[in-house]
Amino acid sequence: MPKKILTFFNKELNGINEAALLLGGFAFLSQLLGLLRDRMLASAIGPGPILDIYYAAFRVPDFLYISIASLASVTVLLPFLMDRIKGDDSNKKARIFLNNVFSAYMLFMMLASLIVAILMPYIAQYIAPGFSPSQIHSLVITSRIMLLSPIFIGLSNLIGSVTQLFKNFFIFSLSPIFYNFGILFGIIVLYPKFGVYGLAYGVIFGAIMHLFIQVPVVLGHGLFPKVTFKINWQEILQVMKLSLPRTLALSCNSLAFIVLIAMASTLKEGSISLFTFSYNLQSVPVGIIGISYSVAAFPVLVRSFSMNEMDKFIEHIIGTAKQIIFWTLPIIALIAVLRAQIVRVILGANAFSWADTRLTAAAIALFIVSLATQSLVLLFVRGYYAASKTKKPLIVNVFSSFMVIIFAYIILAVFKNFPNTLSILESILRVKNVAGTTMLALPLAYALGSILNFFLIWTLFKVDFLKKGNPMLVRTFFESLLGAITMGATAYLSLNFWSNIFNLDTFIGIFLQGLLSGVLGIAVGILVLFLIKNQQLLDITKALSHKFYRSRIVIPEQGDL
Image (cartoon, rainbow, N blue to C red; front, top):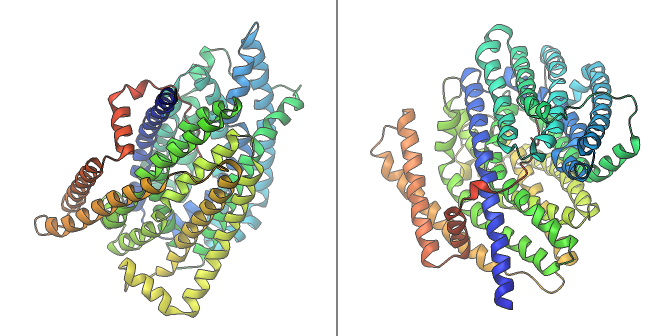
């Protein structure tokens, strides 16, 4: 009997691995285009006043998107639609529900956007207190243009619930890709004509394409929503009640980010751009690993908890946590070693200088320290959501977001009053004699807040769910750490070897140096993990041997603008 139970656990855990691999594949394709977008911005414009305005202009529309549009997210709407699609007149019930949500969403979003557009001259002074009057003027106009983007992307996520209901996952996964196409169009075609406003027009064009790529599918199912003046507010309140904790948590993260951008605006020109570039780069592995595994595990966790099978619930949580640790620790080591090559290959062209490369690489090194904790937090928060316990993760997230701001203020004050501390950090990260290193306080604060967030949520999770004792994560941690150290050390030694062979003043030289060092480091690390018979490596190998691309999944909607 125990053997049968273990076999069943392994089967479901393998299913999580397979779903995570498919989700990670979709995320990787989307992230590739996002990296191309950042490269175009870095090379065509470069860190400076224009990109600072552009990135600062995202903050208020992004906050609106997270605060209002996420109330009608795919994750929230899909269960409601599945419930209504059953039985007679199923399409009619689903259509009425969508009309209600659509009408309420348009009412709230249009009203909020109008109010924010009017107040934008006042809000802008708090978003970027370090900007000059002319920059504030440009920020106001750019933000007003971008206020259209949360409307379109929110609507896209709303109808995306229909796309995923009928398992049109490929179409839904194309939305963020078309969004980035629109931004690229803005960079290449519109920016030369309209300046920073052209970049904003590109965002709107991308948001429209994000929506319209799904319209034919939804029309085909006869479920495209329409405005109704007879809104069933009871249904809307049910949706809001379910989504509110998640929305509040995301809103707090967005507010913390707004404050960090405001701080960056008071530092050296270009600090907002470099901070955003480094944040975007560190978000790639978080999206591919952390989000993919937590989303893949969520349906299994919900089913286990709803059936009161707590042993299975814990087994799935711990099994998924082991996989996250297995992936993230080696990636931390590789990115820490190859950060300069990664940044130079992805961003380093034309207007993006070597000094910009070094400073961005240093910021990534600080961000990436919290990769494992960021990813694990996503998992444990979904564990709480699966158990319908949303209060504690909300409180922890609010507190941690607040602490990110406090950490940033403290670290900036320490750097200012005790310059030797900044000098030590510059030496560790190899950015001595690079201007603008004070900006490193912001990614450091974010990483500390993320680590604090993990330890708080993990402590509470153990008390609430692991009352029989601590799970055996220690072996996985040390085996993954051994693999990470091996990969990092091999890659580091390889860098020196390849530097004598390739011309590092060229793109191809830097690319080959980083690529070959990374590949060699990964190969040696995998060999070590294989020799010690690491269970997570065996699980991944088994998942890859199956047709994981046929897994039935729900693809998460776009997390921010």
